[in-house]
Amino acid sequence: MSEPITPIRKHGNEPIIGPCGGSVTTLIEFWQWSASNILDNTLRGVFAEFLVACSLGVHHKHRVEWEPFDLLSNEGVRIEVKSAAYVQAWEQNKFSTISFDISPTSSWNKQTKRYSETKQRRSDLYIFCLLGSPESWDVNPLNLNHWTFFTLETTQLDAKLPTQKRISLSRLDSLGAKKCNYSQLADAVLPASVKQD
Image (cartoon, rainbow, N blue to C red; front, side, top):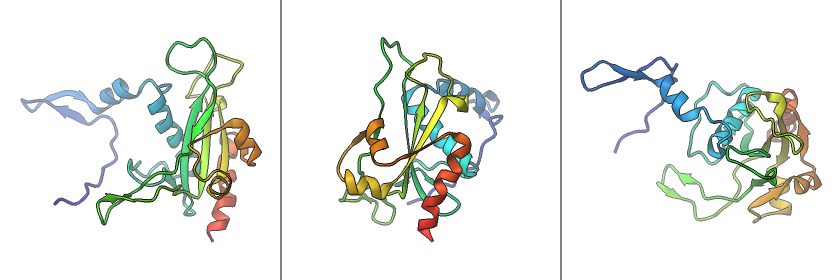
């Protein structure tokens, strides 16, 4: 059995080596090919994680796909990041109805090599990232003014909606989620970090 491989941060100019030993293309061309459509649902979720990581100053760490939460702040807050958008990558006749996934999940246990039997939420804080507005089809994921963020402590979800799988914007509001823009996001996480002490 092999040990987990520690990823090395890539720069994009790394060559993809062909059968004869020469460069066929570069890693950045793969990134451009696979990751240019940030409006795509799956990629938008990863991009939202990256934006939150940047706001908290933890974007220099590697993203780990199978951790039981998405990000760990410098203060030790375990964060789950969810995203939604009014405008999708496909053709639409109307703006999307906004809801976020809040399903309790099983987690992978590295020691036992099995998923946990109990499903639960394993973060301290949820950050819900909303792209766009219900008044405009103009949306640019690379423009931080097009994003709105909502923070809510996981204890609130567990107390009020212990088994619920999705949550609407109006329900987030009724639970007291804090709405903020990108420049306010790091400060919005601080109250959760105080509770970790």
